[in-house]
Image 1 (spheres, rainbow, N blue to C red):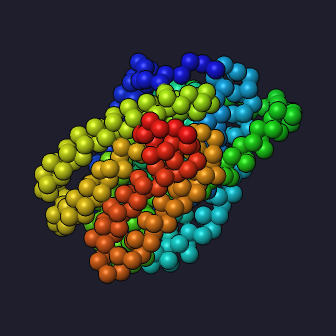
Image 2 (cartoon, rainbow, N blue to C red; image 1 turned 120 degrees about the horizontal axis):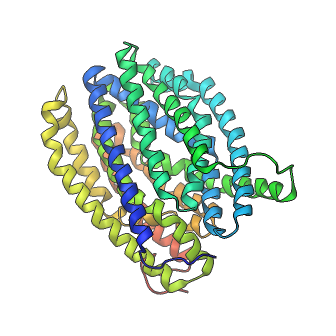
Length: 433
């Protein structure tokens, strides 16, 4: 096994810088896109677009079926065995092709009923436009997992930035053509189709020649077992940050969802600040857990949490300061109406931000089923809180519920680490059973 740093080596810090550069592009693109949609199409279409996005990103986890987690972990686990990496990567891609195709067909067929559930025909039509992209998303997600597991984070960052840039360009093109707002859903399909050739060119994964050999069959079964256990975690991890928007779509108007989703856009961006650190930390954690190096694991967790918290505080402070100055650029009092929501969500995310880079620790330790149980508990709490508060307090109820859910998730993660990883006192405690 290749040497694994218990401290931040130069590659860790360089990879972090590259992925924060990609994140900056993603964040800027998100702000520009929401500004453009609100100005050109109106706040109602902004609400529609964010509901399409929420459904797309959640169902995309069904398409990839946890295979990206399996291929990331096992690529990180065998860095010195290139032949094994080839066969295990090919097996994951073939499985992703099948699961992605089935999910794309299913969601396309269900787009109408989903639109009726959201009481919005435009949402249903937009989901139909996005559904074909689920096939390509599954393949791209596995390819990105391979890059992550092999710590090729410059290419990983480039792929992330390219995807959002194509989404933005596609939305601008749809507007220029005078097409209706629901057609914005097609931007997700266009982006995934455009990304796939570049990832295949970078990795050049061999997809044939294994002849159904024993090792190939072994990895098909291994990925399937690991992926199905991790599926719940992947599905709920993506839906976790969007539970509020999905539930608001059932209880309130598209206009109200548009107001809330504008603030939620910034929270999703802030949530991605520690998630960037998690992406870099995951393959390191795989090797540390495989080596059972107890002291270095705790030390690495402490340093990672500290780095994440510091970056989050700086980013959140910048958002809070800048947000009011956006008012002249957005219509219909969008900024002042969404400001209270922003404040509640920023405050609620403060503590959890330190632990987000570590919240896949069970997965990296080889326990995808337990990881899924943990995320199930987190999402259940989030859903219950939103269900209790939205009917009475509307968008502010969603904000309060989500903020409390962040605190609950922090507690659950540390309890799980104590129970299943033997880290008494949580991930940052030096005591190890």
